[in-house]
Length: 352
Ligand code: DAH
Image 1: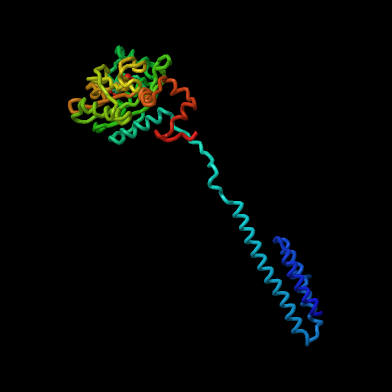
Image 2: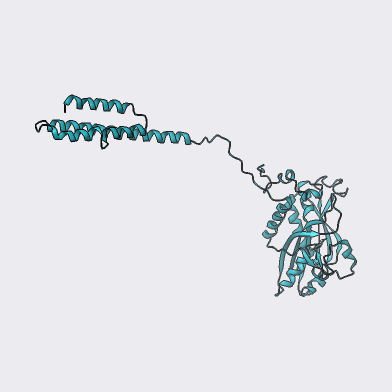
C-alpha cells in the first residue's frame, strides 16, 4: 500500500462525483467504491499486510477516503432528489389561465320549470302539493264533481275512455275529490295538484290531446270569492310582474258556483289586441269558482259549515304567456334546440 495511490483514489473519486448526472450513475459508483468487492473494502482488507508502524497513517487515509465517499454520496443524492422534485413540480404546474372544460348541464323541461315555480309560490302561501292518478274512474273525474252521467257539460271534455268506468283523467279536478274524501276529520284543506290531463282533441297550435293542469283547492270556514280573487291575482303578479293586469269573468262549471274565468292581460300586445289574444287583449289561464255545495256534501263536508274555492290552471297557457311561445306543440316535440334555451333559473346562462 502506498500513500500516493490512496491520494489518487481521492482525486479520482472527486472527479467521478463531478461527472454524476443521475441516481443510476451514483449507485454504480457506490458499488465501485463500497460494494463487497469495491475499492474501499479491498483497501481495508489489505490493512492486514501493512506494517504496524504505518497502520495508523494508512488507516486514517482509508477512513478519509471512505468519509469523502459518504459525504459526496449524500450531497449528490440530496441534490438529485431536489432536482427531481423541482422538475416534477415544473411539469405538474397548472396553467390557471387555460379555458376550463365545460360541464354540460341539463335543464328542466319548460313545463316542469313552471310547475316548480308555481309549486314554490303556493307552498309559500301554505299549500301542500298533492298528486293523483292519470288513469281515473268516471266516479271521481265526473260523478262526484257534480257531473252525473248524461250531464251535457261532459261533452265539453271529450274523454278517452278505457272501460265504461275507467278513463284517462280529463282534468286534475278529481284530485280535489280524492283529497276531500281522504280527509277523515273533514278539516280545512289547502292543496295544489299539478299533472297531466287528456282529451280527444286534434293536435294543432293551440290544442294537444295531452296537456297539463294545476288544480288548486282551499276549504275552510268563511272563505269567499274575494279570497279566490286575491290569491289568483297574487300568483299572476308573482309570475308575470306587478304591472300585469288580471280580470275575472262569470262562467259555468258544474263543480263551482259561482264560476269564473281568470284572464291575464296579453303579453304580446299589452291589451291593444293581437292574433295571440284573438283581438281581446286578454288570455284566459284558469277556470275557477266557489266549490259547489253538492261537491262538498258528496265528499263528506258540511256545506253549511265549510266553504272553499277551487281553480284549474292550464300550465301550457301560463308557459306560453311567460315565454312568448305561440305553438303548444313546442312543449311536446322535445327539440333540444328549444329546450336548451331554458336554464334552471330565469336569468341564468344555459351551459350549452
Ligand atoms: N277542470 C276545469 C277544466 O279542466 C278547470 C277548473 C275550473 C278547475 C274551475 C277548477 C275549477 O277547480 O274550480 O276546464
